[in-house]
Image (cartoon, rainbow, N blue to C red; front, side, top):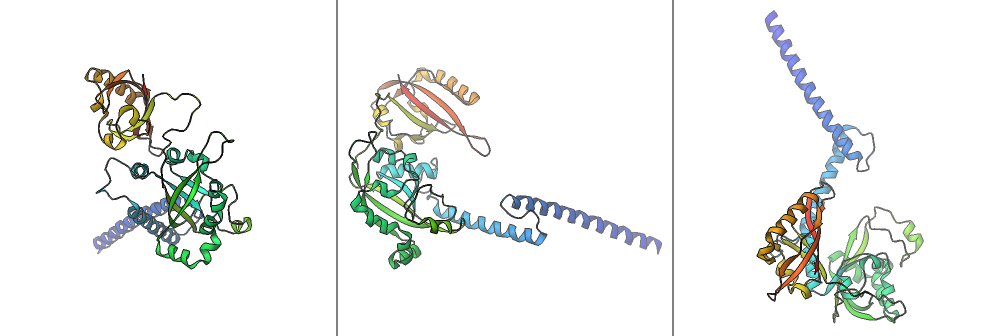
Amino acid sequence: LMDEDEKDRAKRASRNKSEKKRRDQFNVLIKELCTMLQGHGHPLKMDKSTILQRTIDFLQKQKEITAQTEACEIRQDWKPSFLSNEEFTQLMLEALDGFLIALTTDGIIIYVSDSVSSLLGHLPSDLVDQNILNFLPEREQSEVYKLLSPHVLMTDPVAADFLNAEKQIEFCCHLARGSLDPNEPLMYEYVKFVVDFKYFTHVPTPSCNGFESAIARAFRSATEEQICLVATVRLVTPQFLKELCNVEEPCEEFTSRHSLEWKFLFLDHRAPPIIGYLPFEVLGTSGYDYYHADDLELLARCHEHLMQFGKGKSCYYRFLTKGQQWIWLQTHYYITYHQWNSKPEFIVCTHLVV
């Protein structure tokens, strides 16, 4: 009997020890979850059931975001694998002679793509936080106001149908071109907007007044879903400004972006007149395909130096243009790093004709 009692006590002690170890591990995991949730604005003190419930809510929200992101991903069967969504979108906008713009219902510009510079002569930073009406002729402002004004969106059944059905709306108007001389008369370009109405939270707060009254804006919740207009804008009769006007004679240079294996990822609009190639003709090809055989050894040393120090300047080298002519270039380059994990992403190059 004593032996059996001792065996039972030993079994109970072993079970209790295993149970305590399991509880301790569970409590450690709960504490880690609580710490992670606190970083997302949750209370400092929560019981275990609350922590688990909020974790489930967070994971469900992440699952929805992932599903939305995948739905917005550009299909791989017609997007080159070596281009990111942003790079591919930029190429498509350039090919369509258009740019992307996002507006609040106040008419405030909250985003505009870089391609606006070559089409209208405005820098994106000069447009953001400005009212779109400032760039329209007076005779068209009231009509565009009706399309953007929030009280129209709330009451107009046609606009409501567009929002519910996720359809597009189209309209044409004139947009002012950029100019370095404020005394010059405004020149307008006839453009076509193709607009999607989207719901967003955390929309940037404009610093200038739009259509919406200050009282209405004050009562609007920071987390409330707001309607934004995301539009592609195409020039009906494009007149390209491949470079913004400079007072000084611009030097012959262009920029490119390369993978760490030295494959072209991006080529700016100044390159075609210099090297003859359009961006889509070189994307995915190696830069070494265009270098003179006698310069390859020196260039390889320069690139080794770049990989070691993160930035540098190349030797003078010969580049074969599309017209089968050799031109002399010198390149300044640097490596960009991922902002979160500090891993090298790609190489940015500025090429100067010498």
